[in-house]
Image (cartoon, rainbow, N blue to C red; front, side, top):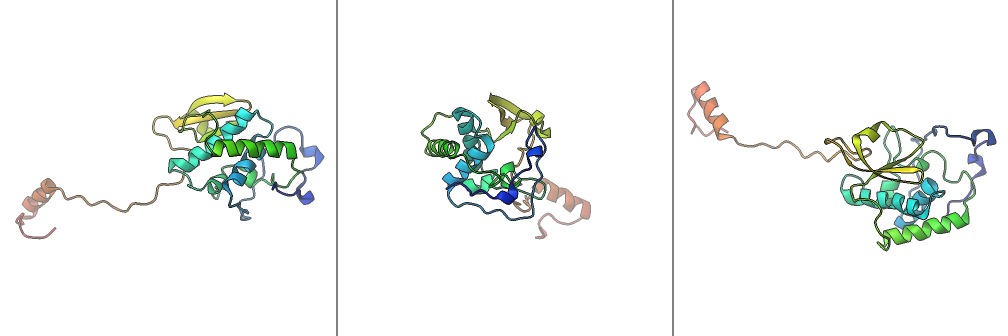
Length: 204
């Protein structure tokens, strides 16, 4: 079911024209759905409901690519609602979009149909598997110049792999693996000579 309308979140008419940077709420814990199809549908609807079906499917592909990449959460809903202390990966999850206006049921039904098709692998891939980032054409994120631009669909520009080993925007920091100790015989022998110790003294 689509999120219910909350009149308290309605945006004043004076603020509905043009683009203004969203005000993000990063302190209120989000209510994260447990159904991956619900999360995909939300993402398609709030990120791309005015786009073509191809553009909506591409947004869903980015989410699935993230979940499969190993650099983002593996759970689709966790990918959609991923955030840190500075921003959220999908703006609609923390800028008050959910519930701000009544859901257009026709657009929601289309988003749900597209989500099901992409999730089930029934649609032709539009993007490479490395495509885990996109942005609207009216914003200029600092990371865009560090990424391979692969396609523009409607108002969204999609990117592939980072260029020159740059980090992937929004990717989680790899887990700490601890220190790796490697025995180097040449170093041990040099140390033994310098300290006057026998190489076979038994200390490592």
